[in-house]
Image 1 (cartoon, rainbow, N blue to C red):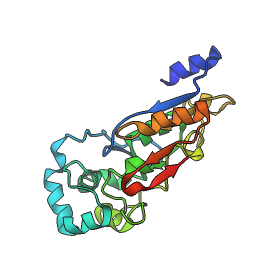
Image 2: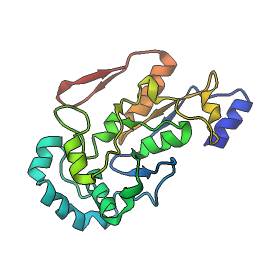
Image 3: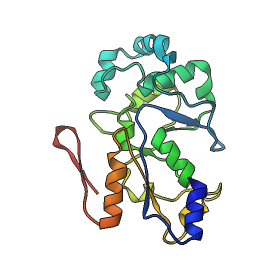
Image 4: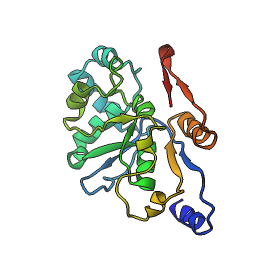
Length: 212
């Protein structure tokens, strides 16, 4: 993708935007050098089966549901992160990036956590609509969550550290990078916003709208 975008720049055929469409729940762990730690697991992997019981010993599911409003699924991010804690994989982690966050980082150098994807983790407060840090600390013992943004926010498109073959993203006329979530809606809506300058309203549960 990076090589293709570099060629587009040489030909002066720079895309208006780049949309990233992935899924929820899964993530990559990033160390202090900005490198991915180990393998990235697919959510259908059965590694969380036993750790789930230990999570619920620390935080009963009734309490977890009251805090986050997330239904029980064996692949929820909270169980995956606790599994990584037990294996020691979490020890060297400075940040965790959900899959669209991770691809956005590889393309732009920006390390941000996006709101809609974070809602699939089982770590976000249903009341504050931000990370539930009590749950994060109890399940992970480390602070690896960054401030949440919507994928259409300006600071989410391009920025951060240059280099690593990504300098083409920082030149005038370079494409904005918009990330999607499970359904890919933010990626599609981001393209409409850039190209046509229209206001987009994202409708979420309980009639709460987010306008960008």
